Image (cartoon, rainbow, N blue to C red):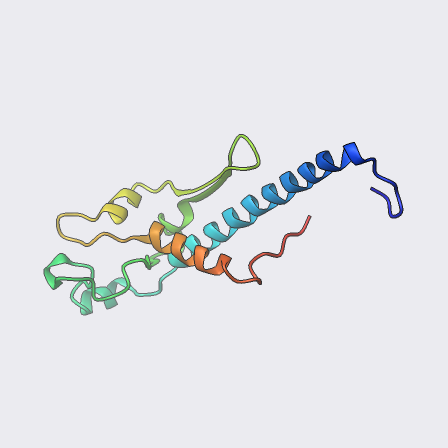
Length: 143
């Protein structure tokens, strides 16, 4: 609509509906990107294998509870398999998006093993993004 353009009364609901659809699609895209970035950040821990060994494997169940934040996954090589396997996909329509990790170790980290605590990166990522969404700075919708 051009500045000063007259809009007929019967066109207004349609224009509002289109604007709402555009804003909703931008919001889905922005949230998906925020989830992807937070997952990447949580997959970029800097505790080395040597430090984990020195700390007596702080995620081992024998300790009763994790000794380090279990939602931070440490990188052990430049081509780390877990961190590089994050995928962000938009759904079939602009109102659905998916962020997931396609690594072969993702399920082991999420569920834990007989010897190691679960590493709840998905829940921690979701919680962090949800918390950030409550701030006005998060919602910078740009076309």
